[in-house]
Image 1 (tube, rainbow, N blue to C red):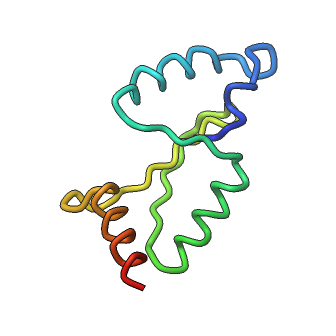
Image 2: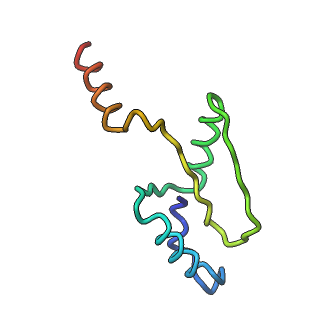
Length: 92
């Protein structure tokens, strides 16, 4: 998610507080990484060089409320990938 969102005030963007509360509740079971918006866009641009990227837009106009979801394969966890990479590095 955008790192800027916690700094957007209700006076500048009416509805942002309600959005923040709702998104926090919806995503409470998931790890959330916050990065500056421009960094996220750069990451998407880089991923688009290798993968197809799907963008879904809404008509909401509150700034920095974008939610970017990176899907990994279900059969291989991040921990398994990390262990594999560690083994590979140790074998060099």
